[in-house]
Length: 278
Image (cartoon, rainbow, N blue to C red; front, side, top):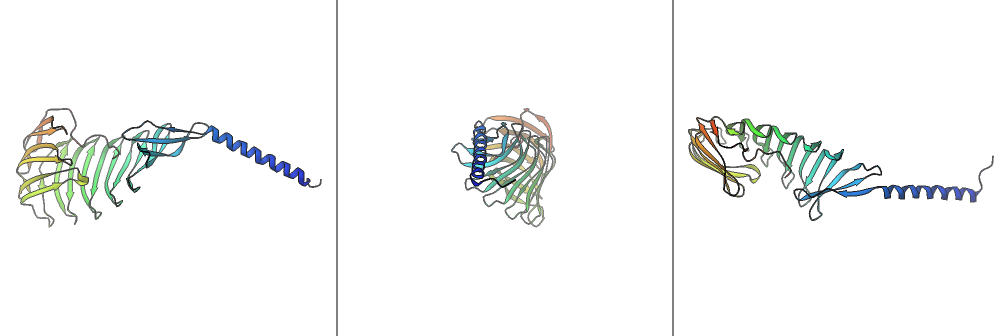
């Protein structure tokens, strides 16, 4: 058979192009864009394909419309890697979601994108190690959690890597002896000011041979009192009173030789809630 004539060929080419354009237009009409409800000052912009399935990644915005991160979805719930940015577009936080809850490693960064905190999370609760870092990258502290509350040994470190504080917790209560060492490794004597990482708070203690002794007041980062108590030669002793940010008593605990003997409330201590985005 001979080759098709040029006019026939042009008509066929135009027909194919028209079909492609129609298919593309139909696909675009089938796609739609949704937004999630505003929660904690942010919302997601969701694009769906013709079948209604979410197209990943989903962009996340604050109430002004500024892009603050991305996340992935499966079966209409957040599932997979997620990232958040600060006001200047630098990475501030990253985590992994499973079926709508944070599950896995959570990492937070400072304004220079240096890692400042890493925690293991199980179904939205810190479970395992929580590690904070000094600006030089050295470990600042290690705390163990069990199902969202502190449980087990806690150690803080000087920037040179030497141990600073050694403490312990049991079911979020203080437990056992507290010992403080200076940056040379010697037991500390005198007044010590401890500042929590990421501006979370501070407290002052007086130590003899590394053991804190006397009254204790712990402040939050905003200056409000978190709790008060006292140490007896390194051990929590007597009544510890915890306050909410309005100054109301939230619970009371009593200690004998570093052991919790009475908890006046079933409420968890500050810092024991589910791990959430900053």
